[in-house]
Amino acid sequence: MVTERIYIEDKDHPKEAQLKKPAEILKNGGLVAFPTETVYGLGANALNEEAAKKIYAAKGRPSDNPLIAHIADFKDLPDLVLEVPEAGKKLMEAFWPGPLTLIFPKSRRVPYGTTGGLDTVAVRMPDHPVANALIRLAGVPIAAPSANTSGRPSPTTADHVCQDMNGKIEMIVDGGAVGIGVESTIIDVSGNEPMILRPGAITQEMASKVLGQEIRLDPAITSGPMSQEVKPKAPGMKYKHYAPKADLTLVEGEPEAVIGTINRLVKEKLSKGFQVGIICTEETKEHYHDGMIKSMGFRAKEETIAHNLYAVLREFDDLNADFIFSESFQDTHLGQAIMNRLTKAAGYHIIQTEKEKTL
Ligand code: AMP
Ligand code: MG
Image 1: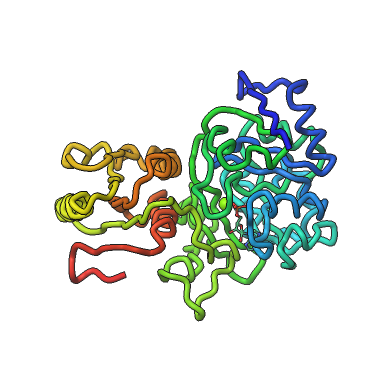
Image 2: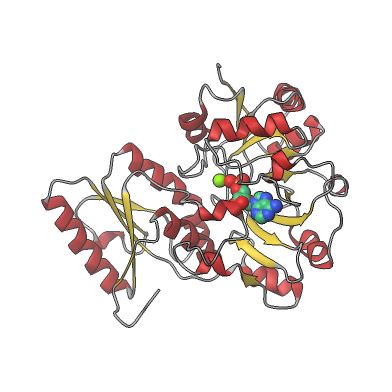
């Protein structure tokens, strides 16, 4: 298959004429990658089981990992869900359109092929002019997981999508680099107690404020390596996602101790002839001298770290790094999403520089 790529010049005011063809492809059961404010999505008609199957094939995604249905207007929600619980209403009003996915009991219209056999459905209303215009034009809800090969870092530019999906999908809509850079927050409002299944740019603190009570994180995402006892409620969270090709290790602790440990580990690996990368920040980069040093952004501005995280992991893939050592981040606010993605990319390989700290 030849993958066509179209470029949207003004992503804030996409021309309808340009989006007609991708919308037509989506309507007819084909695959189109497009930008959202979180990461690039791989879109298909969410109500068409055959189209959803193509997503799993193109990504190499396990079929028990359900898809998120994307809508552009509130009026399109009732068709997909059995009910909208009170917590869901509050969160939708506060954060839609935006980087928040909500899990509802599903209606009969949503095929099990989209929900991985579950009786619930994940729905999001993105906040990106190209995504929203495309969904509207297609006239159907669009299932859109990240447009990467399963297990690789999510794509934040159309070039990333091209690296993974060229020849496998009908079209890539290039709307430039995305803004946020990590996938949406997922909150399950289908049960008795709302719960965060995946941290993202809508933070635990922000959701708690809107709900008027502390919202908990699914214990499975805070308990370290997935075990048999703690199964994550979002099936996708059990896979080793976001993985770079290199062996990634996170180093936690006081800044000075972290820098010292990383410098020592890098020297060790370099002396054995390995290609070694360092993931650091603008505040700390001058303290590193050996290996391939990449700053993700400003520690004091966590949104810059989230924005660059996946691109930096992909750059190290291109550089054929054997080992990467990364600084870590605080586990609150947006740092929660950053640490969630980094610890998974590292396969939970974390070094504590202070003995008294345990995982
Ligand atoms: P992605 O589409 O790659 O952003 O991944 C979607 C995430 O949403 C995966 O972790 C899925 O397991 C999760 N998800 C989608 N639908 C549901 C659902 N009905 N219940 C729980 N998690 C879901
Ligand atoms: Mg994904």
